[in-house]
Image (cartoon, rainbow, N blue to C red; front, side, top):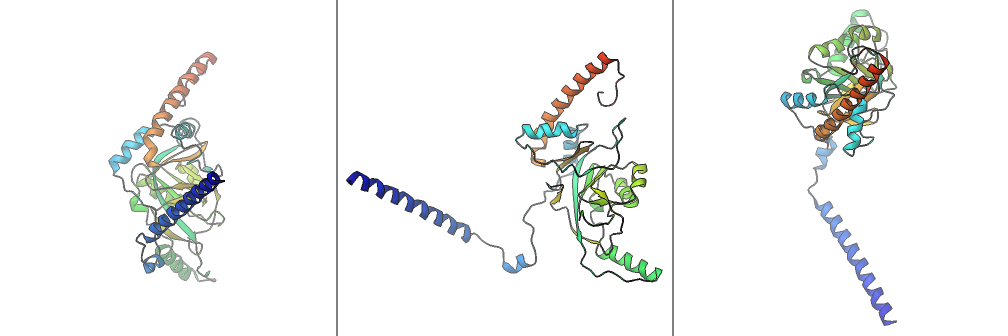
Length: 289
């Protein structure tokens, strides 16, 4: 009986000390300096945007040059990131080039987020009045402030309302982005002028067609902040790889490790398929060179 009481007493003490430790820890957390309430009321983002130099971007892009989504997915598995970065297959290429694979993307993420507008719709207007309203809305509410951030090797990643029938991406602005070095565009939503974009051969990965103009439909919310596309968080500076298998996003901190394993996977696959081509008497193509 005395042994039982001692054991019960020890258990009670251990339980009490555990509870005390938890309470002490919770008090320490609560005692941490908090942001001023008024500052938070004005809005605050808690995820950091790290800035990389063009030289740093070029070094990373060299590691991923020519890699496929499948290779990179294997590299993510090897790095302990299974199923991380795999964008929903609802987001896919507008067009494909199965000869030279020019629809593929390897680039560094620049991000933008558009949100649905809650501004009242304009009624019927005379042509000049409508054009004035449209221009003002583009300039003041639904502009493209991310354009100066685009440089050689950039991939523009746009989060937008996938249910809205709006073509935030079109044949004109996508060419402008390309002229600044943008190697392709990925969006969780829509695009219009798709026939022309196919003719222009600018890589575009999107969900479906949207036809309306941005004014009255969406507004720019942020630039170069984390966005969500196809269920995946995309942080500015992440590596984006896209091809016929879809899109994968590699967190920048893991890029080198992922690329190393992915490269070995690709080279092994190419060698094996080259042998099969020779056995079958098939001419080599860009996929095995």
